[in-house]
Length: 489
Image 1 (tube, rainbow, N blue to C red):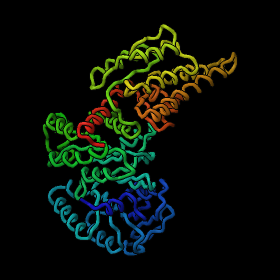
Image 2: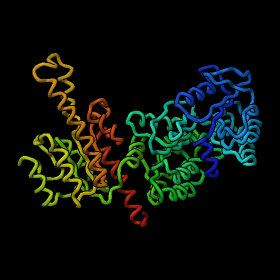
Image 3: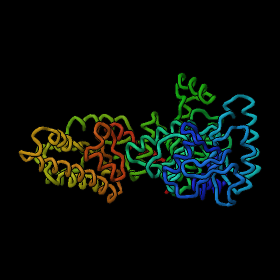
């Protein structure tokens, strides 16, 4: 496994050189230099080009050996495979300690490519250089505004560290980050993982103060037992969320074609993940939302959940979703019932889900939420109904009667209220140390609605449905129970 110093050279370099920079906007050598500069990377940026052209304002040099010594830690390599051995030697001569190789023509290209890959790794080890890839899409590190990759997007800063056997899944997770506002600390596509594999990156994330949760995609494993043993060690320190392709016979055939991965018994693998404390997700959305929840909500201390809703049907469906998990729809204690009675008219549900039944006034929702979350017999809250008022306000704002007939005032009131409710959920969660998950389809149907928009502004995830919030909370509780059973702090 690479040293922490080598990982720092990859993720927090003092300077970066794009080897094989191009003036053609369709080439990797142009796109990577563009993305690096556009993201605002604060370190020094260099580039090599055989013709010594100026590209995007950077005066290139013909060779790595033309660079100043000791000012570059990372080489982002876009040159043909045949040239890379000498390029690594030149990097070593200039004190470069990490290289990300986008170059194809290695292990994925048959026996000759596999031999070239083996020789490349041996040379890198001899030179003391970490080689990421080859055949990868790039590396992202938001603490230093590093976006050295050949694909979009540049994600918002945050605390999720992602590593993937498939480069496009890094993009998928980061696209969801852009959509929801939940950001990333690090991201890397392992490519052929010739020298550094997904488990290596996750182990680095395990000790990385910028990262709160590891998120990974894998398709096949040559030694599943060893892989999960390494993830177990990481899970003892922080959550690890894993999405594994090839779970079905059809997926296994596709994985064999994509990365040459071998089939594994999925039920055995699933059980081994649970024993290792690894959170396994079934879909891209579930994996991202689990990681986003770990990164932004406190772990629950128990499984007792209260659903707070402004509409009865949503509460019923959420109760059904809870019944299919390890979570408990807790019976409301008498003292909590009495407290809520002071804030709501008699028609409220007097049960869990707490259906406000249209009885709320200006401050009711934050006040009832505070009562529920503060109660010692409640471990978590799922809040439904955010954005309804603003949805009606939007209809009024866009109608032909606006702003007359008092509509301007009521529209502003509705939008202000939804912002208040979202802010209250985050503040109460912070104050009580308990997770409060807010769910509404408006998170995706109308992301500019002031309710979901305020959730994003608070740095938390607004779940597009209550069942997805329940799934994320269930993952949190299972991980919290795993830690408690092992007496992990």
